[in-house]
Image (cartoon, rainbow, N blue to C red; front, side, top):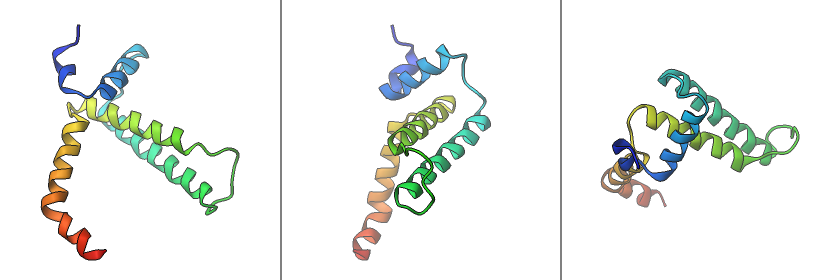
Length: 107
């Protein structure tokens, strides 16, 4: 049976939660935020290597780095009681009402 708070979270967030709990539990919010910054840096580094902007060091796994970033973002959302789906809905609404015309005029 699902916990009540799980019912409001997307399945991906529920899977991240189960994985984290199975491995000892969540870090505090600021540790997760620091990890999120680290993972974003690893995505940037992988992309720079793929685009030949940095010397290539071994294999580059951009998909794996993005996966790490998404996992950590889901953990951050979970520890803060946020639904990523709700966050995205808010952003789409904002872009549609505020930024949509600006994007169209720049094209």
